[in-house]
Amino acid sequence: QVQLVESGGGLVQTGGSLRLSCASSERTFRASDMGWFRQAPGKEREFVAAISRSGSTTLANSVKGRFTISRDNAKNTIYLQMNSLTPEDTAVYYCASGGIYSTDPARYNYWGQGTQVTVGS
Image (tube, rainbow, N blue to C red; front, side, top):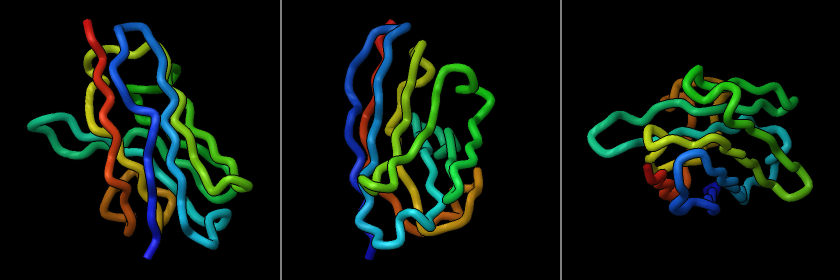
């Protein structure tokens, strides 16, 4: 069973930045496609960013130009750098793996417990 542990969430003011981390226990991490999703209260889980095993990236239109996804295979970790945050970014952010490079959460088999990001106005 793969374990994913997110960290780095917190409270930040509008315009601020946070960097989320997701550490994976997967032995074949460098061969894994990974994703970030988020879920706000009363809303469905939505795609934020994905990074393939080869390093290709995809970002949701709502975060393009503000968020960056990256990976460090030596540390079995992916990151989500979030800049210019707005209250609309407030959500629980989840890391996902065990699937294919996709914007569809149903394509991923393993999920972390989530980390809360709250952006004050």
